[in-house]
Length: 538
Image 1: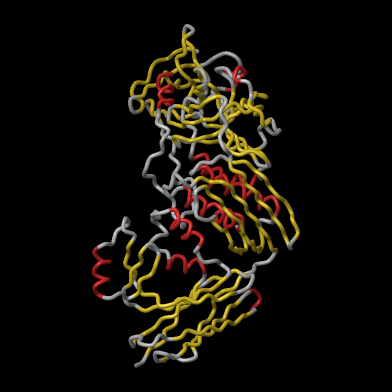
Image 2: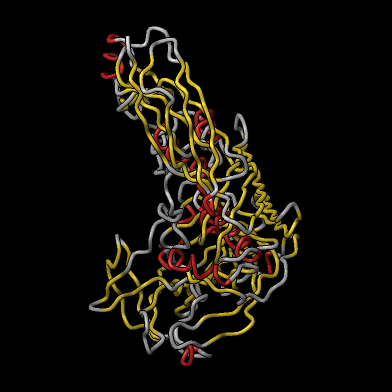
């Protein structure tokens, strides 16, 4: 290499050494993905690691991360922050909380972290195409079938086999589906390992297993050259993932989470995937989403009407109960993304709700598919009488319409309470999603205050296979941690009004719920919403 100069203060109290690399294949390949962390020595002393490059550069010019910046990663606190941002149950992007890599400017040119190649084994091409934009925004380069293949032996490898310059693969998922991120070891100090020379995902304190990898070959590319490597044996655990490096320990093995995804059609088992996954609040939900998406894409058609019944359990350590998954989805296209999100969002909501004691223990999912659109639309709602008195019964007729003009009628009754004030009374018949947004609007975007409330909130979400009749009036009401307090006395209303805050868990709602009735629709997805008015007379 030839040292070109030093880029001072290119980041917050950070500088980079700029160098032109040479020798071996570099004149032909340029700076390659996978060589992040390659150690650079000057007069026999370790100067730093190859970490950054200029996109589309014709020469192998790289930014070298000083080793001093990398060694500071090991002293970072392992304790997670007490307050973290979290996803809500209405989020759809599981990468939203992951930090994006920052660019370094050198004149008019951009220096970027060398993209980390991520090898996907067993995943469908459509899965990588769908998630590639999100992964690339994180500084990752997804690749299918570029690993040397084979399962990693369960035994721990010999630490002496790992040297500065060795390839490692950070394994996020192993088993029937595998995900591994490749980079290079920069420095080994006793049992401590420093690698990459830049962030992996900048998730801070973590526990990601890594394996020693062998380079199979190099693939020169007009866009970006990269290495083909094969993970061989477990070596240790990455404990810190910071902006300037990843750092870990040799000989340690983190607890991985067992994941099972079973698919069936017409009561006949089609396929089962058994996976070991990292236990990380940000990565685990994304990995689950990709695994479920791929499992469906590999088995089911991607175009045409289809329906999926999803059931399963997510177990957490120190949780009062498991999170139960029981829902159904139907669509003409795009069912895979609906089903994968339905499995991943509850997991993300629990893991990212600031309760460190809730550690993921296991994840089991059963998916049953149907080659038809099993869906009913709430078409009509009518009342036998539009005027009632306290003590009388309101008879409702609900018409649900399906494919090819099929109709199903359901009848429900609601007794008007004695003493109810005269005035308009509303009946809203809605699907599970609309009802969830109505019932849990106060807590659905806020952080729950206890693990029990957290688990209860998720398990109390309404299912898609029912319609829900909500009886309400326009009087003001309050919600306390998701519980309704309709039309409270003036003294209670005054107390609630003065206590409204996210911390207190109290919020005022626009109307007051008087009752709720479930309407079953069988093995069908219900969608839509209708409201009618009935007048209460003296």
